[in-house]
Length: 225
Image 1 (cartoon, rainbow, N blue to C red):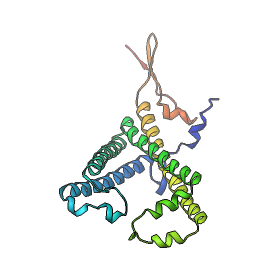
Image 2 (image 1 turned 180 degrees about the vertical axis):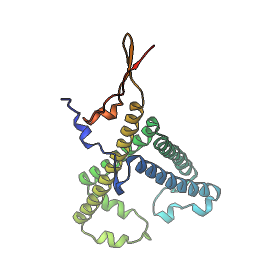
Image 3 (image 1 turned 180 degrees about the horizontal axis):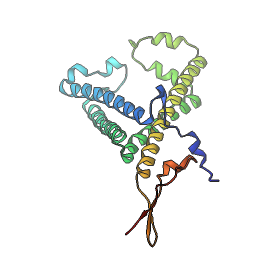
Image 4 (image 1 turned 60 degrees about the vertical axis):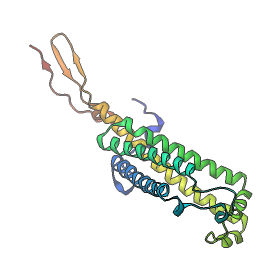
């Protein structure tokens, strides 16, 4: 009996809304593509009309410029890169090219790691939340209400919110990974295997027909002339 690796037990071809992982990856890539396209349009508008989107240090209550040209250019470059990565994932899932999905999967891992670091920093340094709220502009919505909340309760609320976000992001990562495995396995099973002897050539069944223990009867051998 062939033993399967333990991580294959978590493999599934379906994701949320009972759709296929390939469909879910296409929808996820398209959603990120739309979001980054909207961000890119806003950044390009800020470059075209800097006075409209310029926020001075006096308005922010700090000693830095929030929307200067350097930050806008960096954000624009990141948005262009994200649009490329999301387009590659959408195209790769649609055309069943597994290698095109890898950059988007790596981005998901990087984003998950950053959110995990934020959760760890909140847990280790809870006082930084209060300091960050105090540095917000005076006209920030609900600033006074947030400041009036108990520090321990505020930390618990933020940790609960981050935990929900991490769980959701982890589920999306598993969907994209399962899509990658599905596309890779499908491309592998499409390769036909032949066994040639002295006078016969036998075509073996695809891998998917035997992987689940339900092997189909192979076709009759083709006898060469």
